[in-house]
Amino acid sequence: MKIAQQKVVRKFPENFTSRDLLSYWLKLWGTEASYSSFGGGKELSVLKSLLESYDVYTILLAMVKAKKKGSQISILTLADYFDEFAPDTKFTKLSFYIGEYGDEKAKKILNELIIIEYKWLPSASDRQKAKELVEQLETWIEIHVKSKSVAI
Image (cartoon, rainbow, N blue to C red; front, side, top):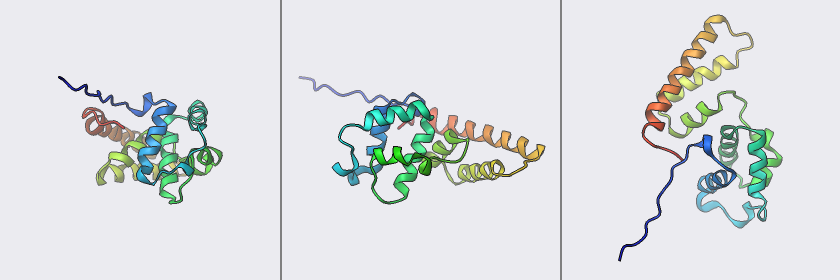
């Protein structure tokens, strides 16, 4: 008699639903997650409303930042104080993938890009350099993440 095996479906964040975000949150907290980190079943609706207002990478980066702060918070608290946890970069997709899977070289390139992003008056050469860095990082993601079927 054959035993039924569950097929693992890998999803990339751009296709995430609120349920996928909840799974990521639980994976992020691991065994530290307790009942106190839940809001009595409201998590999915809260995550859905966040998805309607923000892109998925902004939400994922906010979750990572909340975890790094150290104190266990609920998804409801994350949503209430989302602006405190939200990243202040326009390169959220790059920041997420490089933060999750990046090697030291990729992280160094991302830091260069962020430094250029924060310049008050970037020169034309800065904008050109930023464009090149974005292309390098997108290529890195295609080669090291998406082509290898690495997904969350």
